[in-house]
Length: 282
Length: 282
Image (cartoon, rainbow over all chains, first blue to last red; front, side, top):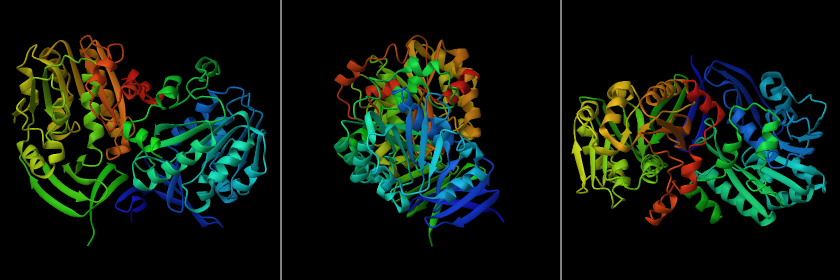
């Protein structure tokens, strides 16, 4: 019998992937975790039946969350990742020899351990000596830090369930305080297309732009997320993602990417009118 | 009982939309035609069970196929649309007072008549006095024309069924011959993500770049097409979509758009590495 993974993108729109093998299923104290294998997308996993990462297109998300800030502030040495249990964000960070420490705060240790078992493509660099894992709530973790990081990456789930507090004004203020004077915050910024995600996108932007002097949004194509049109937020105390973009410095590193390049860095901040209007009115 | 429209994006990936009402179904001499109504996407229609146009996001496709060439070559007066039976491309063209004639060649009159009945949002300008409809094969139509058009828009289905010949070398050469010396060809250029579409994308690009001195590709987010990541080809005899881009001239027209803007015009030609590599190796 054919088995399908099914995600409701809206109440009346579904995306389904035929499952070759349901590799693992368990319920942690935080969420239901499932790993699957498919022909087209390779291995993938879902939290509470929301698709998180597929082997086929995780490179898009992870390159875009990491290389954009790294090409603006090449002196980044201390990084905090909140969420990101699959390890893909850390993997991209470990490609920079200049980064000295990467702390990852993931509330659910089981996500990390299962990704290490089933998704070494993303989790394979979590054992890098510069990486320190903290299995606790990112909200209280960041609230204890002052002037500590050059870069904070909020690689969270949607603002329902364990990810909810990572979309609050208090949390963004705590990130501001935890960043050094030239620090950058990148956050998973939802999507403009379907109402559920666009409502969260507007709420997040409204809060972040009250907290950070520079607050911009950039877009990318990630086909396995609802609508395929997804956003990250770039917020900082003083660095501008376009005016302070340093493509020559970044290109000298010689990092090979499947999605990101220096021209795309600039282009990804150019948004369609309907998205710009939503953000301006947020 | 709940009814769903279902499209196979790959053999193992499906997109489903819950149907409030199946408005119409018939089989023309060319294809199966179905019109539906849904909550999230409004009315939409499918040819041979492939989704063509939804009221929610058709503006993205139709703005991007029309405004990009119009902002490069504002003197366009004579336009040929091949396919485009829903009328959305013609609707965007009729917004330009400078355009004198719009010929639309659609092989299947039933698509046009049904869109006029069920989708006035796209088909409502097909009665503009500058528009002339030809219900015949676009391939033989264009083969009879020489030095006749400033702009040809190939608004076709995928290269299976009636759309197949619109992806042939002979057809691209006939378009070249039908264009004036500063003419532009825009074609529906498929998608880089899933193998079926990326194979066609590479084949089309390989043929067009052998025919036209300038052959580039631009991208946009259209969530209801497979992967949501879609492309148009921009081919011309001498005008370059970036070097000859005339944003000031275009902006003076004061056209209000939901997706397209002058910055996005430039940004849409900046492609992710994996797409660039596919096209370079095509």
